Image 1: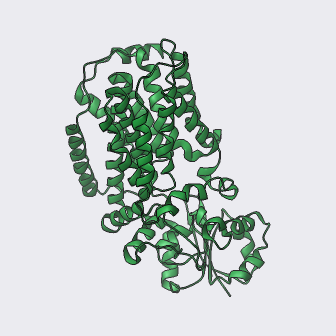
Image 2 (image 1 turned 90 degrees about the vertical axis):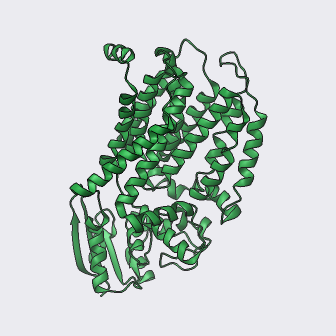
Image 3 (image 1 turned 120 degrees about the vertical axis):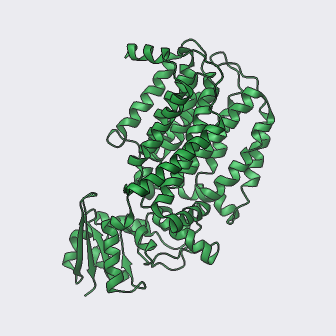
Length: 486
């Protein structure tokens, strides 16, 4: 390992080679790209907003008059327009563009923190982006969270290094974008400012800082004030507080569960490497704001897997600072914006080539669940009362059916919908605490779509519902069954 590190430190890559190395995470997107099941209710919402305006009631399920705000309304519209006009290729291309921007900002941030240690910056950028792709980078609003939180950190670091207030001016714009793209994560734009306020405290064990905190305080106030510019006003700002810390969601939604070894062994290795970097940083004092950002987001990650977005974004600060003395400073060679044009041009050609050689990007029409929807289209109408479980509801909503449930967990909490705890009812059904016959009698569904991941899959055979269609998804190892009320 030591020989490899020594060779890497002596290696002097050309600009072209550096550019190609930054291509590596982009190329892996051909492998990691996937359509997340949340994507379907996102584009359904986007289409509904364009047709009906900014909705305040839930319209996609069988439940009437549930209070609802689409807290990611702008993301919904963007995804809908892309998918409706360009299909999966449009979404794939958009994710590539976003990731190019993420890599560009991440690389420049690493260079800034490490004092232009190019080889270190390349290494950190590539590893971090690959981890983001494997863990959280998919067709969800998180892609915007990563991009704008990274940009916020970069601007704050520029402010400290250059001592110019102009670098804080874009931060309120980031706040405005985040409240409309993903309101539930918007508070993190303010949370990320806190370590920069506390980082000004000068203690012997930390490096001495001399930047002014008043401009940051003023910026924070403006960021809060400007966030009211959204269709749902104070409700969007409150969304985070109404949706987090709910036991039913934390105990059942995958991304809200604590990080475990089985779920994220690679993530634990990454955490270990970041903590290890503090051991190697024995030549310099600890940077307080980087330490606070790392520890705060590490706590979020250990509490909820969703915290991986925040931890990955902030960890590059600690890595770049702690390891910078192990790499020599090189000539000023920032990746210029013109290289982004080159990257974009190459990928336009690349995607056009994909069309020509018919390389398949996964399409929803190839999935078993779409065939279930095709069966319903041929044998019934859209106004049926349809049972779907938590995972399947989103896609059936996209196909035009009103369902019992979908993956928008917070929508089905009484605290938010002002009517009833549907999510709790669903989990009681799945655990056996709610009698399945009592549940079916209550709703009198016309059709049930069940799969082998739920208890009702076994119990429904004891009811009057008759099996009318069945299909097995070999890739996902899921067996779907459609039952009709007899």
